[in-house]
Length: 114
Length: 114
Image (cartoon, rainbow over all chains, first blue to last red; front, side):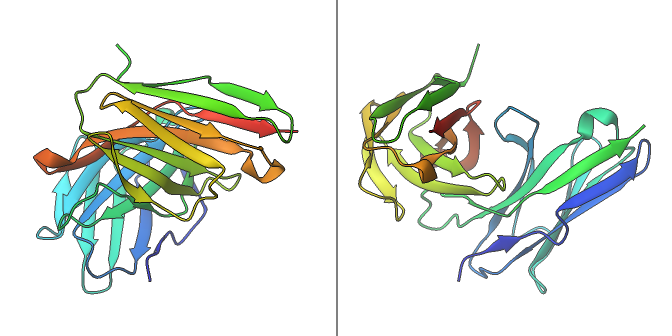
């Protein structure tokens, strides 16, 4: 079936520490994965994406890791800042016959302590 | 410039009423979506239109009727509102013809049915 889930609903980290948010997916046909950040009262905002032919992709302070063997991806945020406090979603899509439909995970709330 | 804008931002209405939410994107995208976010922050796709044609219609009550007058607009009309319709509704757009499945989201419309 289709499902994308996250291991922890809430993650609390100290400012300056690194954060790791995990996500598990079940659809082996998914070949495109995105991380979104949603701040309070706003819509989801694109952070970084990765295609299934890659296992790692880096952005500014963020890294996404994809392990297709165990259907797991993670978002690493370096030197977490108060502005990183938000709900983080992983989402999956299938590029073949692409309809643009995203299947979202449940979301992890990241709380950054000063 | 707002990429994806939806109105209203807040909507409080009584059960049984009919209401509409409007969405416009100025990104030149070919595909627009409506997602529903429940009280637990779970995001699920409802509808998708590609070049004004319906391509995704998830299991949504037929009280919900999307309308796309042109590629830049996708409105959502809801008849006979029920308490369970209370949620945040997000409009999004992407350009799937270009193979780019990153979706840009609006700010959301918080619908409260009383």
